[in-house]
Image (cartoon, rainbow, N blue to C red; front, side, top):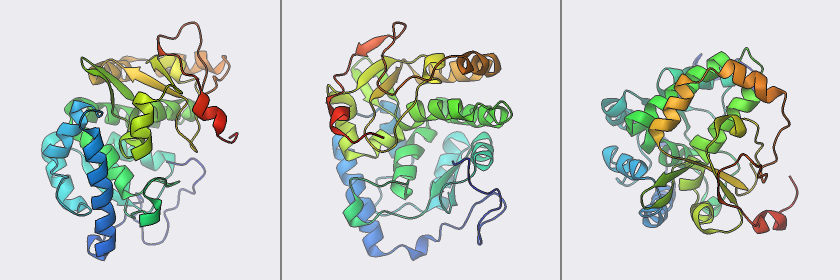
Length: 288
């Protein structure tokens, strides 16, 4: 999503910004890039990713070679949770993004990165969007959370609170960690689709790992150009859904509006600190 995009869709896109995936246009090299990314992530995620994510890979049969055909993928996903995957030309306006989520449609880019971009890409491609996001949409609880987030986004547009709500998405859907009986596990799409951050998020001493706190998270800034300085850990997807669905966000937005924004590396007295990071990695990076 992107707030500064015009509301008029680009040429070739429908009124809701969707476009044909045009699966037949992918080249053998495109499919080979997907397969390389898929293989190396699955090999390292078997004991790092949330069980619900790994189950989604099997439910959706994403281990089949090549970039998935969105039509076939959507058939399997719809049978599981009533969601569909729709192609878009790139980032879409906030209102469009929220409307799709609220109606159980996940928007995905259709291009694939080049072979020399395996380790870093500044904008989401089909691997990030489909491999990173879609497996968890086969889980009924997380699927409901994503719909609830979209519905909340539609309400937030009139409250001048989209910056706060974007932080919830960033620190859960993109970069969230889950507490399990076997230790912390990854579920955020930005982590599971990144070879380097899949290791960094769980193993490196640099970042903070903090217990999920909705009001605190809405105040917390983030960087998009490097690994995260703090990760927030949920106790369960059911708890995440419950807090999102049953919280009145209007007074919460009003309360956090009067509080200072927290830096990405901040640790404050009210935090449940699972690991207080050294921030050594962040200090080696250029300032944002």
